[in-house]
Image 1 (cartoon, rainbow, N blue to C red):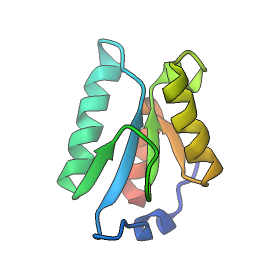
Image 2: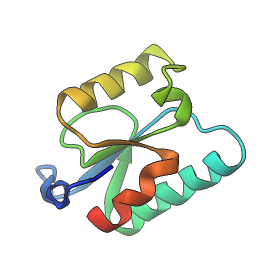
Image 3: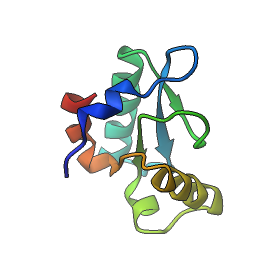
Image 4: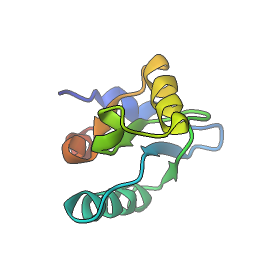
Length: 101
């Protein structure tokens, strides 16, 4: 999986980049990684959001969401993100973002 450095150019009108987090992580490793990714985004001045609104740099989803085991609102958020061409990755594969963004 490759995430283009082009995502670095996506900004909102006020200059804030947004990362869409979709789903509810389970206990254990997924939750630990989820929290770390949210902190990683915050440390880089990116806003963490849960609905696909405005300009979004990338979407990070739980494994359940990627498997289609999610709420209708989570499914809609992913559908909107993909329709907009937003790079979508799972919590497990989100490490590819660290160099790209």
